[in-house]
Length: 603
Image (cartoon, rainbow, N blue to C red; front, top):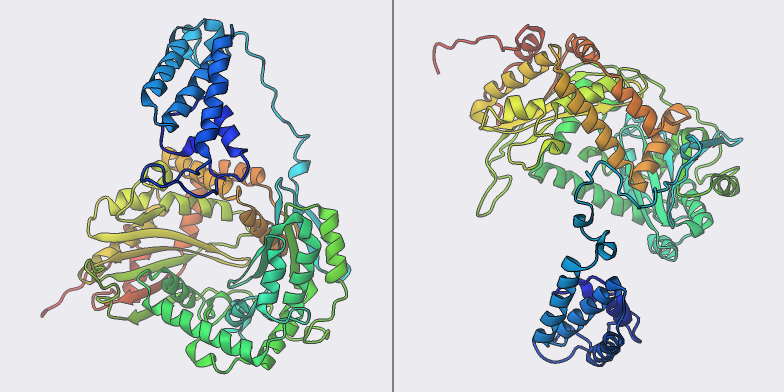
């Protein structure tokens, strides 16, 4: 409902008249009065304001010794006369209010002006003000993530969080890394087929209408190692939501019509991936393919074009039979009672027979990621990527990566701090230290080389491996120089670490962690992923303690170990001046990161 105090006009110091208007019969949705300036006001507003003015004018005549009450009355009268367009009267009462604020008795204005305590510093408590009482909790038990394992192996995890709404979902140890024995693209198809018709719901519309009754929304995301079905809805509808999730995950119909629609959605997404001006998703796909050639996380995350027509209901059921099993699932919830979630899980997910049968999984891929290194190149004309009156310049994009570590290892935290210390971003950006403007890739690369359009560090981590990489963009004629700048930055990672930059990176990482965990869906994903991988969850204060413990020698140790491996290289655009893979590898093995010199007799 609209609040008059937010409309153009003089500032209000009270809420009496605005509250009166808000509580008027019919609200503020009445017919607008004619006239330009008053077009936004309901017709009944003037008589209401006039009645309020008469009431307060009578109060002024009666008088009061409480100067704060009198000040509030003057303020409301000034606001009311302003809305009635009696500006002289409005100015008169606001002047009275201002005089009271300036020259009233100190006892009546000690909380609205610093003049009452001119000698008390801001670091000391004010005399006469009651000591504040803050809410406390007994230890950390109210923040702990509760985990229960059902008889069929399904894990149920919950995190309490105040609020009317909850986020609940099923996370499955399934994704493109498990498709070595199948057609690539199954996880991509399942993502597009999520929340379609099931045994209980005739169509996607039926599912959405059911969620709408509880103010709910749904989503499915498939990554390289995890598939996640999630719903955010009113906590009172938890039973309905868990029942719906169980049906979506275990009893999808996968009709021919739905599969054909999924084929169209996948085809469109592949075309969009190759046409969008931002090449980061495509480069991420390429760097994984180069780093883990033809195994686990190096398999295609997006369905290859040649497989779109080959994936059908039988192929999907064959995959689901092996990977959509209870022991590979976590039912996670945030903002609900743990016992209630466990009760719903027992009701809908314990003993449920899936649509593809209840036979035991017989062909599960348990292979460990094998880092290979290598190069993946894609020659492409990038001159017409963004047309219009201000077309995007033609750029060549390079991404160089080295193997880091799994998120289960102790070195994961130093690698996360190193990634934050490298930072980077686009050449055109604004903001202070919190935006990363003092990271190495900003200070050493973007600030020194005006022709570089982008330099950004990324860290991808999985349960058995990791990849730390730097993405850079520049004009095709300066590709060689750009590659050398990036290899030098990799070499500098294993050098001296300044204490100030390390503390800044640690603080920024903790700040980002805590800020992201303010959002309920992010907490849900964090709970689900950690419990899926480790059967427990590290709490934010535990992670912050680990971040604080990172020392300069830790950064130097993990960087030196990383630099001993073979690089992975992904290149997109005009690659005529791209150094050879052997030269890039030699630069990363050298002491200064320089590329080997090349000499040409003829240009």
